[in-house]
Image 1 (tube, rainbow, N blue to C red):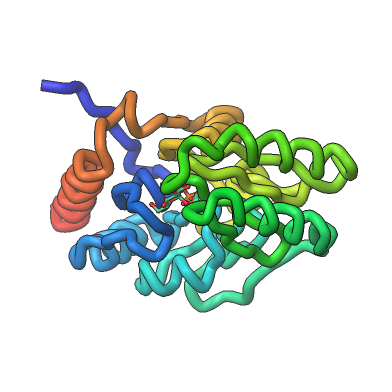
Image 2 (cartoon, rainbow, N blue to C red):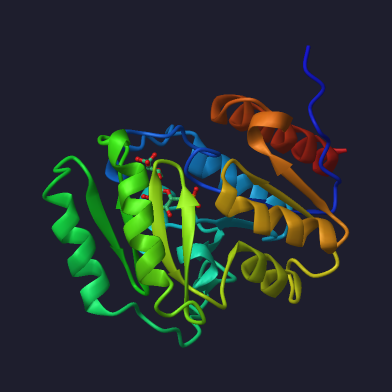
Length: 242
Ligand SMILES: O=P(O)(O)OC[C@H]1O[C@H](O[C@H]2O[C@H](CO)[C@@H](O)[C@H](O)[C@H]2O)[C@H](O)[C@@H](O)[C@@H]1O
């Protein structure tokens, strides 16, 4: 039997969404959220006095749609932060890529009609899951575009996708900023993610004295991870009852 990691009683949980809490789907709008996941996250958050945050590349509105429960959320790779479920959204002033970059990317999708663009507030994602042969072609184009303004933008490699994002925010800035204030401050950060874009969050958690876990190595699949979260919740509930 696999030896799963243990989260301390005073953990602050930072959880990635796609590929970690839910299985990867063919398209961003096709992910399936198990019905017991939002209430599980809500109970865990309550046990941790609110120190549980979803830290995702998705916009907050999408996270609210898929995970409607009252938990803290960081969206758009740290560009939008809601520290408390009922709190205001914090969004630093960030550059947006020139419209011509998106237009040139869109033009290239004519050669690969199964590839598509997902727009974000300060960037965009090119998805090539249905056109895997196009991955390198889009990477070359997007790398050359980002090279026009490397001080303002970066190209993030995601799962079968390339994302043009503004510099200055990341999953690391989200973790560090959340850890600076209650209810996260003073706790042991535990970041779990599956993707290259999560590595910054894992690193930030380690630098703050906590744990950064890659889902595939520490747990296996999102289903395994959800089972671990359920067991953790049961442990916390028992601790409260004792
Ligand atoms: O930080 P995350 O919560 O892991 O989000 C990262 C990106 O996830 C989404 O794209 C990925 O998941 C899709 C659904 O499973 C999949 O079809 C796609 O191939 C993946 O790249 C989302 O669309 C992006 O906006 C997120 O940045």
